[in-house]
Amino acid sequence: MVCKDWELKFMMRKVKSYREFLEYATDTYNDKLIMLISEKLELLQENPFKYSREKLGKDKYGNPMFSIEVTGDIRILYSADPKNCIVFIWEVGSHKMAYGP
Image 1 (cartoon, rainbow, N blue to C red):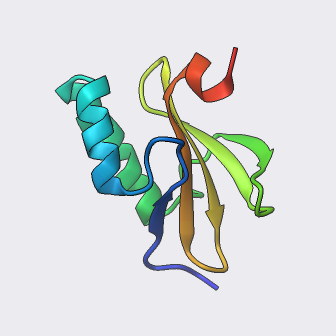
Image 2 (cartoon, one colour; image 1 turned 180 degrees about the vertical axis):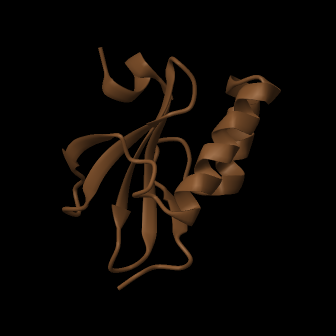
Image 3 (cartoon, rainbow, N blue to C red; image 1 turned 90 degrees about the vertical axis):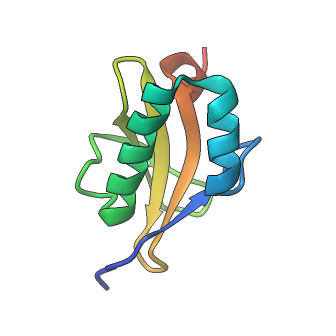
């Protein structure tokens, strides 16, 4: 099955929707960084496999996990469920935040 429309589903601890993500990002990041993150999220919504660089194993649902670079230090960790056309956003943040210490 080829997905034409991918749904973004936020699985972050503090964020469960795109609206909540924007509120969180406004408190956390500057405007330029919010724009860069939003652009990457749009790319993932178009085709999450096109921009996948690092395969990071599987998420708790068995879907492949990936990382996409926003800036030199900021990453988006995500997984993609091609059967249901869902991109799960697991973390957005610094390399240390995304991957742990």
